[in-house]
Length: 304
Image (cartoon, rainbow, N blue to C red):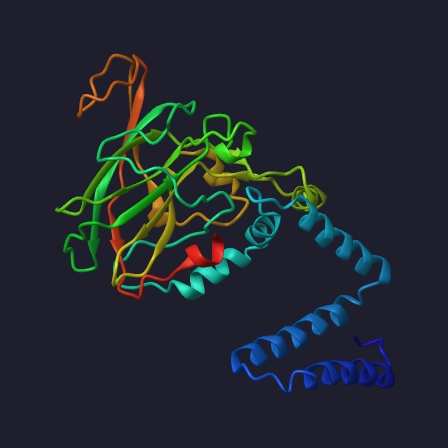
């Protein structure tokens, strides 16, 4: 702001001070802190870029459009947060590294409460298209002790890159929940993850296009794991060798520790548990989950 006169700068700072002072009577101390800091940073941004009125109006239209396109099954503001890296920043701040606990990543906009329960070894695809994939592993604490009865929510896109809620026929597919057994292990059949674009037909997609960014997400399978006395884990597993990992993930969700090896088998190869894959080829991977101690609260409340 070197070309701004001292008088103009003082007037602008006076408004910042006036707005901050308006929160002086806020009873909730945390809310007061957040609103004061938001005001300081918002006004600092406006003053740094010298935002024009036309740009301000464009921003208001952008947020209005984001609200209009948001539905029960599509959350454009989550997409905006994800694509600006805000979601991963919040995840990182609220899920600090703890010993060897599994790392967290973004929640995403397509989680659905009350997904059907499946038993150990059952199929969560429910007819969704894709290469069958066996996923198994264990759930333990950071000292290696098994955690029986952990609730494991899993959900993913089909081979065409769509989640069930993106279809208009009210299907439930490629999502379920199950529980770890007495030895802390779990197993289910799903689909081999494939890359797909985030919904880019709205304002967030327009922002990505305008800035030359890809809407593509790296191939992944979502997990949310909860157990009493442990921090809720919201995470993905990614596919080693996926070309999108080199190009970049549009929501910055990839962590090296979450990239897994997948094996592929030709049609006719027997599955280890006798699961019928209909004569198709199939894949398998192992994902051992380690939960950090905590109060069981996490991103589910924020993301749902």
